[in-house]
Each structure stands twice: as structure tokens, then as C-alpha cells.
Amino acid sequence: MNPQVAAAVKACETVTRLRARNFYYGLRLTPLDRRWAMYAVYAWMRQADDLADEHGPSRSERAQRMQIFREDTEQALAGHADPSQPAMVALAEAVQQFQLKPEEFREMLLGQWGDLDAAAFQSWEDLRTFCYRVAGTVGLICIRIWGFSNPEAPRLAIERGIAFQLTNVLRDLREDLDAGRCYVPLREFAAMELTPAELRDWKQSDRCVEFIRAQTQRARLHYERSQPLDAMIDPACRPTLWAMTQIYSGILDRIEANPQIVVAGRARLSNFRKAWIAWRATRLSSQGLAV
Image (cartoon, rainbow, N blue to C red; front, side, top):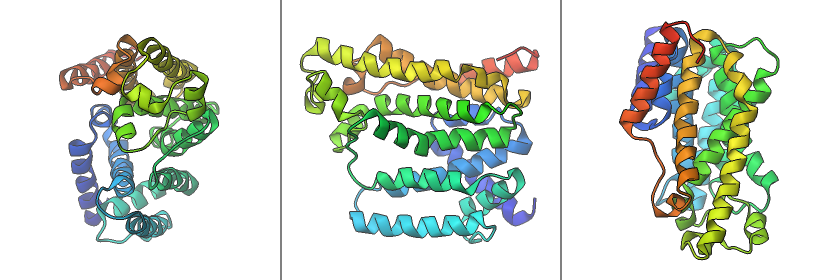
């Protein structure tokens, strides 16, 4: 790795350590020869997400910045990254070394582009498409970096990514509703004779509990469907996937136990708990046990 790329990777690692509240504990378990690429992908994703969610600039200004970011990404995917942008330099190296697929990054940007407007999904199909674009693609990119041999792995990686994103949707529900966004399908609100505003105020509490539990059950189903993925990736990278899954499914556990937390606070695991999961993954791996 030349000095320019090494410096770019170091910058991406710093971004990941400071910003990846849940990913960082898992990514640290990835072997060094692949960990740097995970940092590069995360730093690129973080930049895209920040541009889409940036407060202050108008919608047209954010769209213009996203378009510039998209053009810079295309240059990086083609191996011609702007040397002044560490995330692009590191991404270009990762794409080349791990033969990552440009269309998966483009799909991710389509999902981020949708966040420029106040989301209001009508159906599960709308939500699933969004989850695929912003998280299923991440699953695909990750397993290409980690390594896999079973041809079923890509399909299951998409399922796991969707499970993570559905967990995020529930975790961030209050924040999104307050910002005028509703990722949970509006048709499902109507079927329950409930509105997003009533859920936000936790009116008709029995109906609200039933509604949130239906959402958690759907997320749980995606975790269960993707369970075989853990045994399909390179054994050296299984602790990373296991730890990340434990963290996200642990958040879902908290929401299942207390559905009102989605509007009363923010479901999260403590740093101690996340560190324990990472330690446990390391122990299981060092003992040669399946994680």
C-alpha cells in the first residue's frame, strides 16, 4: 500500500472510530488485511449519509452536493480518485483489491438520494427497496471483502442488511417522525387504524404496542432467514459479523421488551455491552468455536 493510500486509510479509520457507534466494535475484529477496506467503505458511507441528512442547506443545495459526491464516487470506482479526498482514495483501492461491484455503490447512493426529501413510504415494497439500497448493498459489499464461497451468501447478506436497517428504522422512529419522515409504511398504519402522529404521542397504547410488535416481528424474521450466512463467510471474519448481529439484534430485543421506547427514548446498548460482545466474539474465535 503506497503512502498516499495508507494515509487515506488512516483517516478513514479515524472517522470510523469517532462516528460508527455500532459498527466499530465489530469492524475491529476483522483481520488487518481486510479491516482497512471496511474502514474505507464506512467512511464513504458516512460522508454520503451526512450529505443527505445535513441540516441548514436547502434541498437544492444538498442535491447539488450529492451530485458532486456521486461524480467523485464514479471517478473513484473507475480508479481515478481525487487525491484530496481520503475516503475516495481508500475506496478506489478497496474496489480494485476486492473487486467490489460499482453498481452496489450506485444503488446505495440512490437510497441516500431519497433521504433528501421527507420520506413517506406507502407500502412494505417501498420500505424494502429502501432497506436494500442503503443496507442490503452494504451486506453484499461486506461479504465481498470478508470472502465467501457459498452462492447463497449474497442473498442472505441482503437479508441481514435489511434486518439491520429495519432495526434502525425502529430505533430512530421518534427522531424521524419529528423530522417529518415516516419510513414505516403508511398503509400499515391505516390497517391498524392508527396515524404516525398518534403513534408519536402514544395514543391508544394497546394499538401502538401491537403495531410496534408487528414491526419487530418482521425485522426478527429477516434475522432468522439470514442465520445460515454466518457459516458461509471466511472463518476469520465470522467474529465481525457475529458481533455486529449481536449488537443490532440486541437493540431489537430492547424494543420488543418495551415497545414504547421507540417514542420515549432511543433503544441502544451500552458501550460496556458492545465491548463485551466484541470480547466474546474474540474469545470464541480464539478457541476455534463457531460464533
